[in-house]
Image (tube, rainbow, N blue to C red; front, side, top):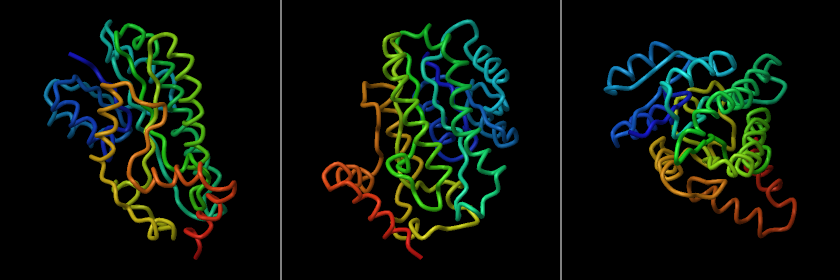
Length: 252
């Protein structure tokens, strides 16, 4: 039975991913800081493994990966844990900016390092990182979040080459806005969100994660027609066009 370890599994994309892989015969490892929601999810997924985990704690990440692997392997690591703060840059506290980087970037590094020896034991290992459309160009009102996803993008590109030589595929998933609690319950709603719309569901992203886990896919995997078009425009139009488009979409 193949094994996938998921961070941020208690809600949104992580939760939908856990259910889909479990329903398709995988053993799922569930981690999240929300232990109550995590236990409730695990109770609905027979034979699942779960643990409360703060991905910024490197030692806890090592223990979680070792215990889930059970002297065996981890076939897929899905780095899905992340947080989002939307708003004018100066309205977000220094502590909140730091948390975005710590969880979205340092947490991914911690988990990738911790899982590495167990990924090496798999015959078809993969690391799937949750990036974002905001890794294409810095998005107003998403400054630190965009920066964190640029970091995820570059880490993915580097490890795709480094770990690819070891037989470990490393790729990322790049959706625009997704209908998840993280987006829908935000206290600030930026203009770009209303103009572009929130047209993707968690299941739309899960379909791409499933493909990445089971097939050879490109390093970067955009989700949704709108972002695919934006990527094409970014390549086809003169330099600076993406900036002008985002300036227009984010206007008050």
